[in-house]
Image (cartoon, rainbow, N blue to C red; front, side, top):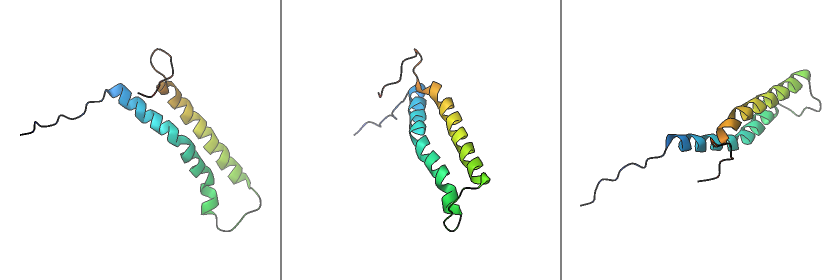
Length: 86
C-alpha cells in the first residue's frame, strides 16, 4: 500500500519571485502586441501616422517603462544581488 503523497511545498518568497520573473519575461511580448494592435484594428494600409497613433505609441512606451520599473525591485534578492535561477 502506497503512502499518500504530500503536496510539494514552495516557499512563498521564491514562488512570487519566480512568477515576477516570468511576468518580466513576458513584458516585451505584451508590449510588442500592444504596439502592433492599431495595425490590426485599422482596415487598409496607411502610409502616414496621425497624432492619435503617435500618442498611443508614446503612452504604451511609457506604461512599459513604468511596469518594468515596478518589477525591478522584486527581481533582486534581499541582500542586493541579482537573483540566480534556483
